[in-house]
Amino acid sequence: MGLHFTTALLQDGWANDVRLTLEDGRIAGVERGVVPLAGDERCGVGLPGIANLHSHAFQRGMAGLTERRGAQGDSFWTWRTLMYRFVAHLTPDDLEAIAAQAYVEMLEAGFTRVGEFHYLHHDAAGRAYADIGEMAVRIAAAAGEAGIGLTLLPVFYAHGGFGGAAVGAAQARFLNDPDSYDELLRASRRAVAALDGAAVGIAPHSLRAVAPHELEAILPLADGGPVHIHIAEQTKEVADCLAWSGARPVEWLLANAPVDRRWCLVHATHMTRAETRALAGSGAVAGLCPITEANLGDGLFPATTFKGAFGVGSDSNVLISLAEDLRLLEYGQRLKRRMRNVMAGRPDASTGRRLFAAALAGGAQALGVAGGLAAGAPADIVSLEADHPALIARAGDDILDSFVFAGGAPISGVWRAGRRLVTDGRHHRRGPVAARYRRTLERLLAV
Image 1: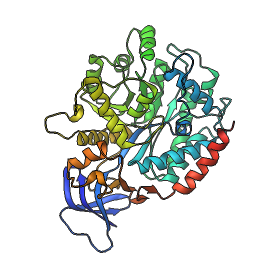
Image 2 (image 1 turned 90 degrees about the horizontal axis):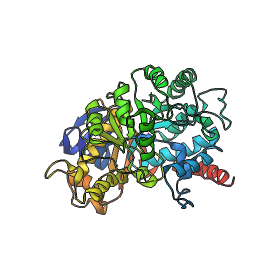
Image 3 (image 1 turned 45 degrees about the horizontal axis):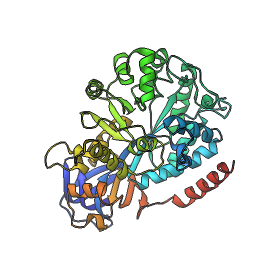
Image 4 (image 1 turned 90 degrees about the vertical axis):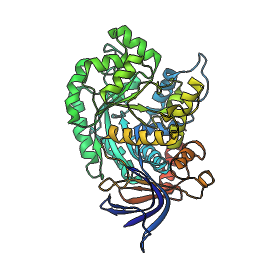
């Protein structure tokens, strides 16, 4: 199978008249400066698919339902209470329906793989299902229906706060001890075994939910795979960690855990300059979720002083948009510093290219996969609508600047593992997936 692009962003830069040969879900060959062959699919602008490194798929179902102001003012913590109310009613069927909708929307947005930070494990009373991996099976089924690449990150959650605080009833569905978590991981690996290119990592939820001895016990269970953790998302979390340990969250983690390139520190919003330098030096990826962080009022990541790897994720899935996540990341820094093109990195550099390239590399590293358009890489490919008004007379990095800052997401096609899933911006399974999602939400929201 051949795809011919008028122009494409390859691993070593832009090239014109690019022909990609696809075999067994991978890019078998890359030719430049060639005409299309008979039978080739002809496309406009070709880009590598990006990994969405942090998602809670079920939260797509509550998007837009937390935007009424409370009596005492709102924060992440009041939002979390509303989220707990929503999650209390979800069945395995509901989770599968909502996740499939989220994954369809991710593909339409240009994300070709998702890191599912999956913590809804048990029934509403906190009892394990007959198969402890039942909910992982449903996540895998949703990913399979949508066709998105999956890195499943089962969450270890044991406590309601720092120092081993007791959990509340609303958190009962999340809980495991190290032994049951080991069982859950084995069930999760079985659940994704039939999915092309799927991977499983581990996700200690946060320092407030995992005691030090538990963190030490579960790290070997990663078996060389990714390790993701929420950290330093809110100022209250930082204050509570200081009260518990005398150290800030990122400071404590880097001093007490073997953080390296396999790790993704999600949010890491509130860091000192010393922590920012140390995180970059560890080789870990900073997992940034600009839309969710803005929606929750978390704060701004110190991007201008961070010199390490980063990627983006849709987190709460209140809005799923690759372009918007990249744009908001830059715009937050502009508002903070009252400057333009803050993330470009050097004079005359393209901000869009810098953001896109960083998200490509950081997302792939965080989810334990390869990324980019090159021979041997997965055939995870996005095409842009070349005649969209935002791309008129654009070439090279101007295309990415316009994609991120000037045109929303003029995505015409998406291929995952060589299979076309999106045409003219619409996922091939959008109709039936959306119909099931509608039925699910109408029932849930009538409760």
